[in-house]
Length: 165
Image 1: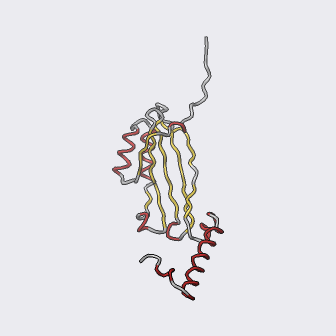
Image 2: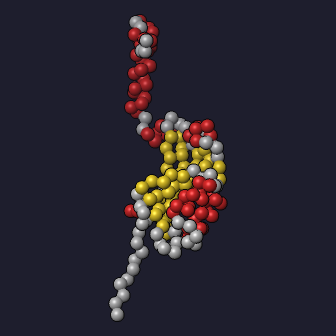
Image 3: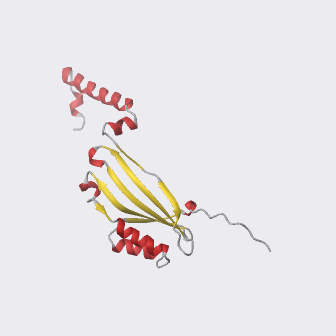
């Protein structure tokens, strides 16, 4: 029966109650950051920096993100991701170009596919490919990616001056 070990009397029951109380007290006193520092939790942080993709149509923005995961040894590591936003269709593609994680059983093997990602971004920049073409090229190269709806709010229209004659 679950919890049967806590239903004891005498010293055994007192020890079980003390262990439960100490665990509850410890969990209430440890902040999230302290749990990460002690290796009890994992925290991944990163900042994405967006800029125009400089494609001929001006329809795409790209972002770069380096994610650093700290905490338990099995979950620590780094990832480099590229984000491509189709501002017209309001879609976001996120591709993981490089991964170095401590626990490869959980996160998969380490890899560095930055040349394949850079090649697809160059095709987009030169107008030789579109959003779907980049997605297909990255999938063909074995780059892990996700495509989600949204993201166009990151697109910033360049400042233009109205000219009148």
